[in-house]
Amino acid sequence: MSKNLLILDFGSQYTQLIARRVRELNVYCEIHPYNKIPDNFNFSAVILSGSPCSVNQNDAPHSKMESFNKSMPILGICYGAQYLVKHFGGVVESSNKREYGRANLSFFDIENPLFENVKPNSQVWMSHGDTIKNLPAKFNNIASTFDVENAAFHINESYIYGLQFHPEVFHSTEGLQIIKNFVVNICHCSTDWTPDSFVDSSISNIKNQVANQKVVLGLSGGVDSSVAALLLHKAIGDNLHCIFVDNGLLRKNEFEDVLKQYESLGLNIKGVNAKEEFYKSLSGLSEPELKRKAIGKTFIDVFDREANNINDVDWLAQGTIYPDIIESVSVNGPSVTIKSHHNVGGLPDYMKLKIIEPLKSLFKDEVRRVGASLDLPKQILNRHPFPGPGLGIRILGEIKESKIKILQEVDHIFINGLKEFKLYDDIWQAGAIFLPVQSVGVMGDERTYENAVALRAVSSTDGMTADWCHLPHEFLAKISNRIINNVKGINRVTYDISSKPPATIEWE
Image (cartoon, rainbow, N blue to C red; front, top):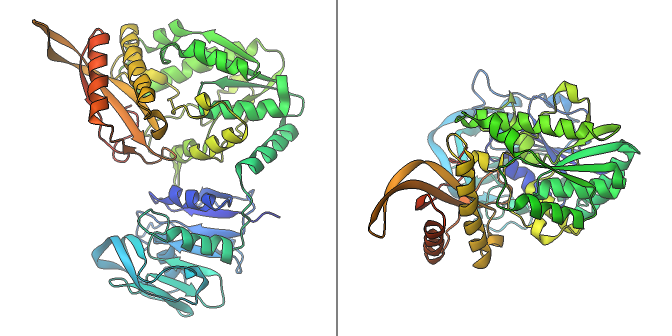
């Protein structure tokens, strides 16, 4: 039986990074809220995440430790370590100073398997306001920094460990080695979770789940829905019916180009022009969340109508991926709404379809690796993520057809420029934003008062965090010049140098 790992999320900003590091080791893991230990997930080891909370708060997050087998390996990280200390009778106190940033291990137990192949004075990353003052009985201190005595511990005659630092972040230089020591060497988790194995198991699961029934899938042109389509196609063939809706908010020529790409893959696909319906639903709306909801509702209406034209459909397939789920559900239930994910949360009751989400356990980079395993064409595989609401959330304020046409031209120049300068493949996501401001300009001898756009390009691995790209100034100068000279209505181009967090990748 495969040995998987459970990550209990206490609300840390780094929880997703823990999962990513574990999966780099080809070990399957899942993140679940600390208060919702799953009954249907076979796991043999647990990692307790960090948290913005203090273990000494009256309402501190509390998990049911008795749910775990006494012999089960457990690793507590930051809050998770402090939680173990307090649970077993130790003392955690507020630190006189915030322990934050780089530190170095002044001591660690070289005989302890958690620190196998870790170099002396290894750099680690601290991020906590409380500190472990006294360890409980049977707890051994196995690491210290110059400022933190109890930087790591091990409970005698057990496989339970705690780290006061964060091994999952980049600044912990040998953090992955420490995680590997726990996950692989101590827990003996299975290291057989690869793209090829995922494809094989997914196709088998889809065949068993769907059998000879029909599935309908809304394609977007992006890598997520494309990989989902190929998996389903390999499993059920022409029983998969794909629908590609033109909502009028796509990139320039995207509707025609994407249809051709999908037809070359042998997919059973229908293109639907629904521009006017979407424009009508968006009329008069400026607030971002209202626009998202209007686009989502119209898409469901159009999709439902088209799906009803297919006889005897039982299933709806969605390209939902793991970050969609993580951002839509927090440790306390529904998260504070940053943005609505139109592909998370199911369908209206009237659609009466069962949902299948073959990619819901994958991060974006894992989806790409699966797509490569399926021989997905590079022009789709390497395509930047594009939001479900399309240009509708890249036009700030009310959406008008005239603004869409302007933004399509700007975006076209920007994206083609990135490809021309061999920059496209080094960027996670790029696009243009139509700003709700006008500015004074001079063209020839004439004064202009026209619109401004912002260009956005970020680097990331899964979209959970992102850094703005340091594009060459020569490139930005040429692209700005091309946009202003070729797109009527634009006289100013800006470049967004905000990272996520605190900003989001999209502006709305």
